[in-house]
Image (cartoon, rainbow over all chains, first blue to last red; front, side, top):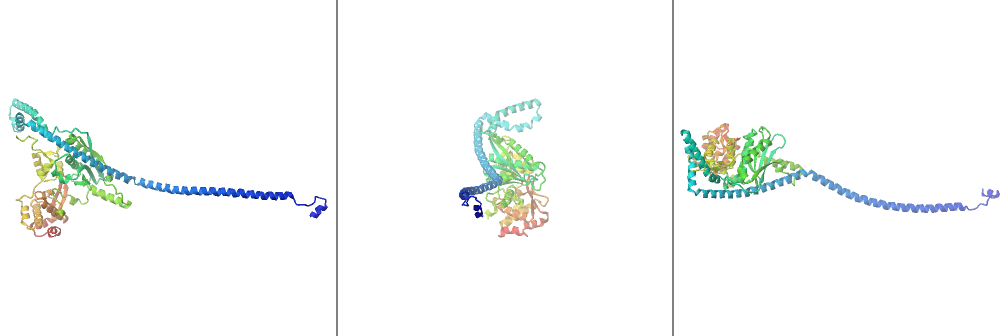
Length: 357
Length: 170
């Protein structure tokens, strides 16, 4: 072929510099391309490594976030229990505070009563006043004869008696303790009320006082002070509540609640008339209004309704399955004893037979 | 000086409880049932006596009572109390449906004897010989009608349920 071309007078055959150049160029391109690709790969590998490092970091952060979320969710789920525990602790703290206040004001009132008695004794040194008192005291004998007297005499005698009464009234007021009034800040004292269950037919009503549980057994070893006044008035209210609910014969039990005295009205199996809270609130309001001794001490009963669960919150260290059972058991123990028959036996002057043996 | 009306004879509920031999909470329940709860927490002598009568607060263990005589005649103290207690129940005619306040059983006994009487009562209630139930003024007790004869046997010392006899045989 090349021979033919030479013979035809064409340009002599020779190595093509263009191709060589082209091939050389291609080789150079290849080398550059390889270098560029290699550089790019290296950069991409570095980027990949950086990204993997970031992913690892994010994964670790993700695990931490997931853990925190789970912990927060668990905390959220425990808020009910935590709230109950905090409420329970606040309840105990408030009862302690109010108990101390009642005790302190009982002491102050006792001092005022002693002072009133002393003032009465000073007044009674007056012979003339003593004479008036004798006359005042004997009026009952005169009173029965009044009807047989002419109206004019009767009117004169009654007017005289009225004068005598006014004369002796100051000393009577001192002796009755009517002049006793504490100049102290007004203080509300919590009386906790709780009905169990909160929905459905009521099984029991609990009235928890800040009064020391010792009163139940040591009532005869101390004067009838403000603490006894609160306990006695709450017991009376409990009996009234039971009667107004149509369950006058319901067992009413005084029971220690820790250091405090609680009253339980056991309504189970008794058809109840009316709304327990409404009737109880009205009865306790009447008890408050009647309590002139508490008013003189600037103490006012403040009735607070709480869920029964606050009175017997779940234990901290129980697992879920046992918490419910224990809470229920504890509530039942608190609200009322199943063994009513034995609990009916009065404790008055009765020692525990086991300690006797 | 003469007693001042409405003043000298005033007793606190605690003092009235001591005089009546009843726990203040039980006294209050009686007072509420009678519609006589005093807002000033005091009772005069007349009111105390009224509560004693209307509330059925009786003192059974008097020195001349038959139950006390039976109690003292028994050489075993606990058995004497058990027998005396049953005599008291029979003497007061407490066969169901007739009943009386449960705390009447204890009034007049000293603290030690009350402890035994309480154990006796527990045993008799557990055995079904006695029945207790709440009333508007407190807890009452009665002899279960089918156990009248059994209570008579305890009173006479002829037979005792095992749970009761354990009180003095242990």
